[in-house]
Image 1 (cartoon, one colour):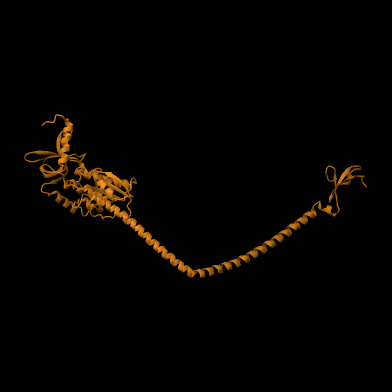
Image 2 (image 1 turned 60 degrees about the vertical axis):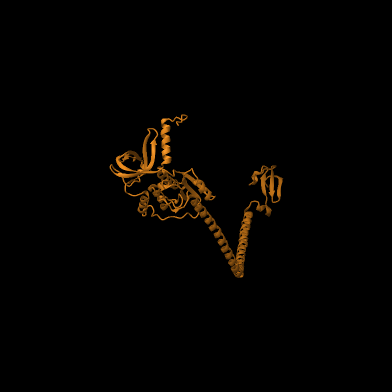
Length: 399
């Protein structure tokens, strides 16, 4: 029966078909013979077609996937392509977006995984695996923001952590590029001081073999092997074991186990601190007790030594005090004698000193000293200065 209530535009219809195929055939393998191929030199994308005796299929492989290919197919090659069917909404063109190409007869995907596993033993898997830092504070999680994975990790990871979530596509043809770029981006941000990370956790929940296949991609495997941050791979659940598990430092059977690893790490550190504190306290107490015992033995000896030294110092101090005191007394006497001698000398030469011996000084009424008799005519008043004061007198003239 025709549904007349809904009429699609061309773009809407093409988009609907595209989404329907993506959801129903997320990852498919198709075998055929290459009939034509164009490799774009500027973009790095591959545009090619494969055929059999009944049909042909247009294919595209973007640079992000083509870069990891070990060969470039040519016309007449019989190949198997792996990818997702796609309808380009603007033109309605149907094509297969490929993420992997292998020669026919080369083996299944499992055989390819095993081959890469052997091939990368001396490269991406050769780096020594590191343990979690002694104390984990900053954790970066690369995962999808949708689904239960992030919630499960946060539920099991414990409290007291600084957690940064970096979103990435964890499924589909863009997964390998998205995850590897996220790993490189986190390492770059940490190196530039823009982000702190003690642990980098790459996590995805369970799924089909096709869903998890991108985590065997060389781009993710290489990115994890080059990471300067300790990495945990938590992809799928047991028995899932993608190749990225081998290049990561630590493999978790599931995202929840990865969170538990980090939580246990913090609990172990706290226990170590508490145990160390108790041991340190015990050792300090023992040393203090030993010190008290030794002090009891040394106390009298030390006291006698201090008293002896103090007594000697006191005697030397008293002797120095006597020397200094005698010196100061003699110095004072000497200075006093010099001062008295100078005072006597000044008195001897002072014009006022002769007054004490009965002499007097003649001055005019205006205070000028009279030096000769001729300065005092008869009847002129003058002043006589004596040792105990002054007296007024009247001149009777020269005698």
